Length: 273
Figure 1 (tube, helix red, strand yellow):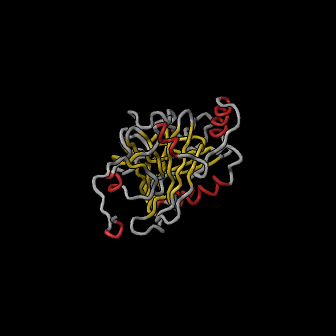
Figure 2: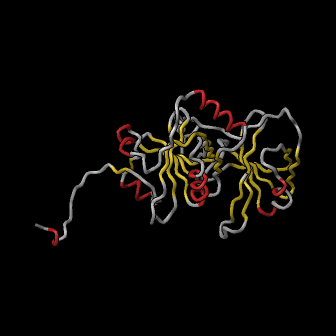
Figure 3: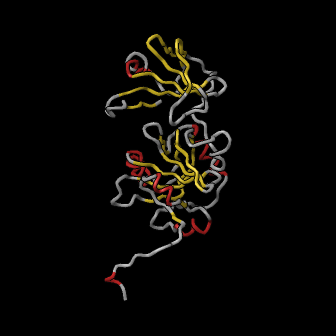
């Protein structure tokens, strides 16, 4: 559940967006306009069970889709949502994607957002002077995944990360945007949709920690950009290469490798020998 700002005024509520599932775990997106928030939206509790009546179903044309469902639910003035108690109703709060297959057949393009969980194994502090704040880090489950958080997500995440270096940092990124370049997958936040949770005391985090402890031995040290050698990533084939065309199409501040050939050099006459 997240709030979408109004198109012409980011400080004003435009709509309340929901992701709901049935007893089989099938998920669908739902939306209600700001006019319904006071009557319906403000009373909703994430993780609770509701009966929904009187709604409209339309094709999901959202630029970034929180589910794989072709359609979405639109609530209107006759819609009602009533809380319902059923201890046997299953809970599917996340739909985690394995790091090894985030662009498999179930995610045909980067308009579909994914959920990931992993331990932070390295991160790079933001460089000074950039127009946007960005924190790059790598998450690990059985494999590694490159992640970037931008702007307020980075501002909120970095202090938590730096104050938790004495223990494993487990992160859930819900509704992360995926991008693929040369068979490497990267993730980032998108607008107001993405939700980042760190070291929460919940069953999901506990299960991941138990699997983590069972699969590793010895001490673990997180690497920062002060002791992280990017050339090691280059040697292992993990470096994030981009083309010049990619940089033209994606002007966001970030850290990239460029594989290019120098075709001409213009030398100022003052430096000629």
